[in-house]
Length: 238
Figure 1 (cartoon, rainbow, N blue to C red):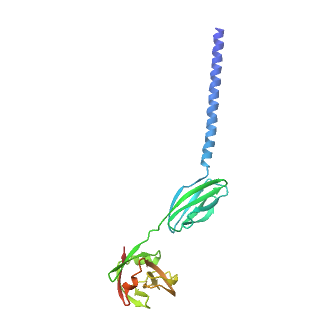
Figure 2 (figure 1 turned 90 degrees about the vertical axis):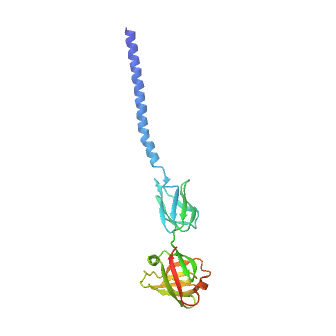
């Protein structure tokens, strides 16, 4: 009986030791898991591997969990974007021209690359009718141009001036932002002052200032269409 009792005690002791080892193993796992989770959270990564931006706008590309010195550069598509406000935590990307570019962040020997897609800015297009001929124009991104759109469609009788332009005084003023001077191109649509709408059908140099309204894209036969006198012109959204 004594032998059976001793054997039973040994089995109990062995079971306790086994349970103790299992407990210690589980405890070590619990202690290690938070550290691993913390390591994963602190991994340096870009906020996105692909970014889409519209011409004329900006977006910020973030570099998460980085405290080290970083070098930002454009490795392709320099004509499409430019970088602003470079820092350890990110960079602002300004879209210049439609196309594809790549931005790279270098930290030591590690490189992080983001593919940038620059989309063409949506432009309001106009149809301009002159003596039965249709011309396609793009509206400029000015306050005056946007104000004129609210008045369309309109048909106006434009008067001849200087053998290179037609003009018409609007019934109400538009917000002027005069900053265009120097080279005038055939097909330019401008605002002189705050109420004079001008359509240029020949190219020339000028010292006058204008607010840009738009541009006729297919202006090759514009001079022929407008002629040498006054002319009726219809402007409407395409």
